[in-house]
Length: 229
Image (cartoon, rainbow, N blue to C red):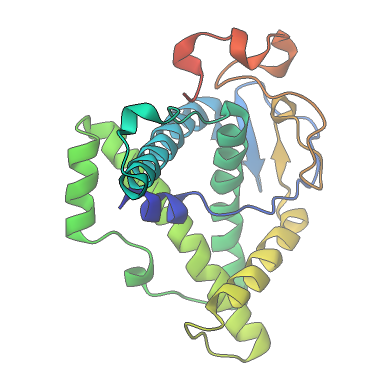
């Protein structure tokens, strides 16, 4: 379950930054003048961390079952916090640009393609009993599924090809590339603490959650509650 849901939540992001530029210290990113606050980013990144660890745990249990060994005998899952941080800011920005581009292109997507079902919402509530955490999980998953749905719809329009089970992945890639290409037209700016270049190359370290990259501390020197592990 969580492996599948994480796959939807953590969309592969071929993120392109228009420019780091100047950005308010309290902002994680800005899209067309709309701020994504660092507090929202931190909260979402923690949820991404939990989703990723749940997925890793599920995969570990499956591996143990296949090998016929106790789960405890296998290495505990650990996820690089920097990967989660960059994925989080990527998705938070991409959903805004994707929605804008869809409007510009006159593309609409059926909500059924990305909204969680009642059973899925119930499962999220069970795994994340804290109310606000559950809400963020639902939002993270639905946003990423919406990005994928918009990407496919954009590609369908540009190519004239209708999505099928066989070609949907290819169309999603083409549509996602169009969304990323639109970053430059939507005045996207990212806080330099994420250590990413305009081509998504790592040009520096990324601090954990609210810790700026200028802090100088390595990830393994940060407090445990700021590591995705």
